[in-house]
Image 1 (cartoon, rainbow, N blue to C red):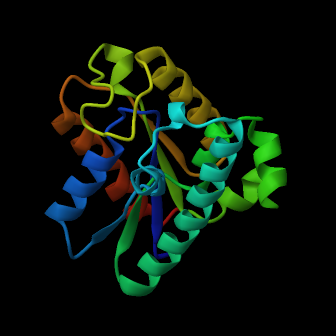
Image 2 (image 1 turned 90 degrees about the horizontal axis):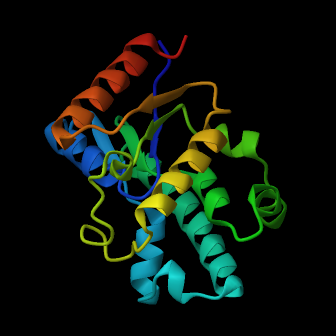
Length: 197
């Protein structure tokens, strides 16, 4: 059986990525480690939100996020050798936020969608809670200020981008986060049991 090392949790703002990843890792610390969302860390360091940046600033932020994501991925792999990493977003996510579109993002960073997908064993896309009217905007994340329609649109764009991954899974929004956590946990268990044969 192949060792599953990196599983991305992605989705639009308010999808529950951070809560799902941290709760699963807290419940099984001998199996999982979380790689935190690079975007939130960059925005917190800048003390600015996406909407407060001009186009040049948005490009610069996405470059920083990409570099930090790579650094965190490698550091986590080295520090948690026996654990499966649950990544709160992956490098492909930046393409949905790049001002000039995904193709320009790949050119700017000297990479390609298939190369970035290959960094990860599996990807689980989570539908934003905005899809069921349960979105809290920036209440649970000070770096987030997208309106509900924007959160939904970003989520759909991320779904399209990541759907090119060979092992791609989708989880709908649910009225309770507990149900979403349980669904993701079952998918991850199936992924690990299968070894992605």
